[in-house]
Length: 55
Image (cartoon, rainbow, N blue to C red; front, side, top):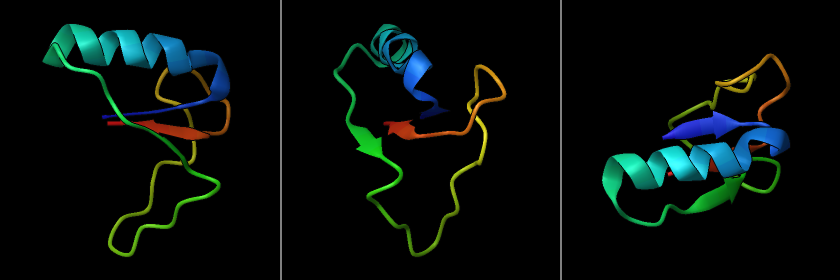
């Protein structure tokens, strides 16, 4: 699972495919709410605001 900014979505997809050998789902964090989990506020690759969840 990767929480990333728009700039790092492609990198996160590549990392996911390399690790799991399967295509991920990409979730827009602005349009999705989670009842039991708060996503990190920052991208895992840089300090920008996280916008997408790659799972």
